[in-house]
Structure formats: C-alpha cells, structure tokens
Amino acid sequence: MNENLFASFIAPTILGLPAAVLIILFPPLLIPTSKYLINNRLITTQQWLIKLTSKQMMAMHNTKGRTWSLMLVSLIIFIATTNLLGLLPHSFTPTTQLSMNLAMAIPLWAGAVIMGFRSKIKNALAHFLPQGTPTPLIPMLVIIETISLLIQPMALAVRLTANITAGHLLMHLIGSATLATSTINLPSTLIIFTILILLTILEIAVALIQAYVFTLLVSLYLHDNT
Image 1 (cartoon, rainbow, N blue to C red):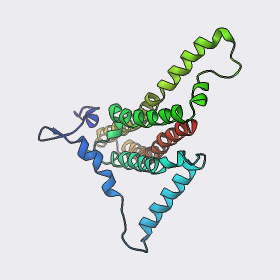
Image 2: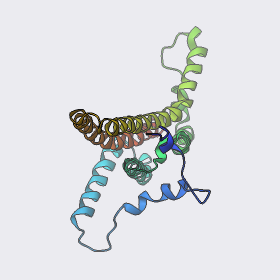
Image 3: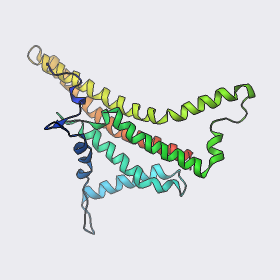
Image 4: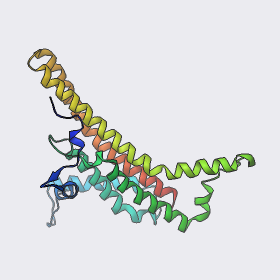
C-alpha cells in the first residue's frame, strides 16, 4: 500500500477549510433522546449506563465536587463516542491530536486547582510539602511537587493520545499485512485477519477504557481540591 502510515492522523479539510470542528460536533448528535414518558430499551440502557458511571465517579465527592457531575458525564460520553467513531474506516479521530487533548485537560485541571486554592488554601499548599520532611530537603521537595502538579494535564493528554494513536497504527499495519498476503498465502491471510478482528475488539475496549480513565483522573484531581 502506498498510503502514508500517518495519513489518518492528518486533520481533514473540506474545500480547503478545516473540518475538525464539524467532526468534533458530530458525536453528540448520535446520543438518542426521548420526549416520551416511557423510553425504549436503547434510551433506558443509555440512561442506566450514565447513572452507573456518574454514581461511581461521584461517590467520593462532597457537595461542591458533585456540581461537576454533568460536566464529567458529558466528558466521558464525548471522548467515548469520538474514540469509537475513529475506529470506522477512513475516519478521523480528534483524540489522536495532542492539541485537542490538551485543550480538554488544561481547563479542567486548572479549574480543579483554582477551586482548591480558593476553598482550601492550606490543604492545597500542604500538598507541596509532605509532613515530616527534613529541613534540608524542603526546597527540593517543593520544586518536585510543583513540577508534578504542573505536569498533570500533560500526562492526561499524552496518555490518551498515545493509547489511541498506537492502536490505530497497529490496526493499520495488520490491515496492510492482511492485504499484502491475500494474494500470496491464504492460510496466513486468515490468521492475520483473525488477529485483526481480535485487535479491533480490543481497540473498542481501549476506546471506552481510555475515556473512563481520562474522566476518572480529572475526577480525582477534583477530589483532591474540594
């Protein structure tokens, strides 16, 4: 295949205009809604999953932290649907772009940290210096804890980007190997195609797990600051 390995990660354009914004706005349209008193099975299952996820994430939060529940549920639904849509052939996955993941991670992390400094300034400052630290190590530990705090949004974004990108690259390579061996050795093609199917199932699980991990880590940062 002559297709560039990283061609699927290039932001698409329509008539020379970037189409990433339209792609980002598309997943929410796939979430079904109902205006009836009695919902169908799809919407009932959807509401049950949302309730289960929000209950698990919000169980450790106090009243102030639970005000973020709508934002966190919207975040996990957006990332999950975006990741799943990116598994379709000839599609674009916005979560493979580090810039977009940073745009999600930095405001959420900053909001949690600012809330912590506003409501619990002593506890927030206490995180920079563990109790019982020897006096000579205080300056070094303060610097280390400051760096670890500032690197949290970068870790969030890089983790999501790396996992989604690695899965897509592996699927592309195995798919190319399947096509290359289809005219050479049929048994090898069947084996590689089976591996591709299993990898696709794994990537579906990874897409959902990474959405949950991203949201859970934001929830933990929020818990530490409320």
